[in-house]
Image (cartoon, rainbow, N blue to C red; front, side, top):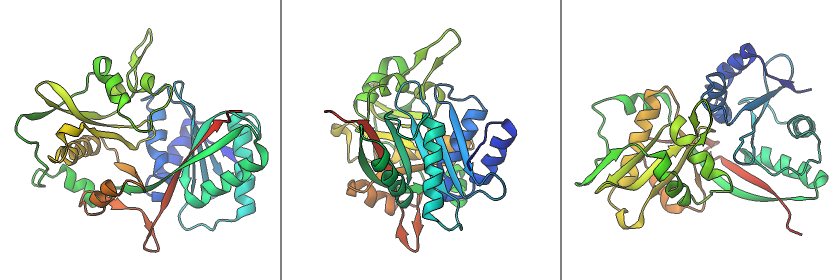
Length: 308
């Protein structure tokens, strides 16, 4: 029922099919990174339905060696959701991605609310040793015009206050500090954020993916990075340096860096984070994902082993 896209040719085709659809925005970054071997600690498997013809459902598992796997589910724009068909696809995805339908392996599933709710319904019926925790998010992305503006030298950019300056993050010295400020950090994120020394290379987010920091008197006071799934991730300004426009400035700098590299910036903001939502709603830099003039809710659903 599902087809696994494992050949280079099929993944390159999937990259083209998912690039211009907001519904599949989390797929192109991961597929491109896999094809370019940009983040080998986070290999992916991509599945699609149906086997032939235009794709309707997309599934991906990023089996990161440091943290629990990310799973992503999406439905192509303009297709009709049929619940029995979707449930059957989810069942097959779980068997092929985790080895069995009732696998009790902890993981994270990301997708539109209605798709994740279907996943939840199936999980509650087949798995007894896991429990879920939902983080409801709104998604923002940059359209083509906004990307062009980000590269335009004439576009005004937020300035840093006197005494502050942009710099690169030192992954070895500052990786642990950055990870300690991340609200949603979990076991293994420190290793992913800093590096894993191998005989071939040092690897991790801060070495392989775009990031930026702001310093004051030589010390890091703010930073932001890109997650292996492509999301802008962990923007943080230390409390004593807030309300000075540093957060907006560092995000604009990271946007420029990502667009220059051919990336399409996107981020999620928790629905409970009203201050950041309000600022993002009015930002000319971001477009909110909406359907029928209503915000689309994206759920980050974490499945963890029950404490009995």
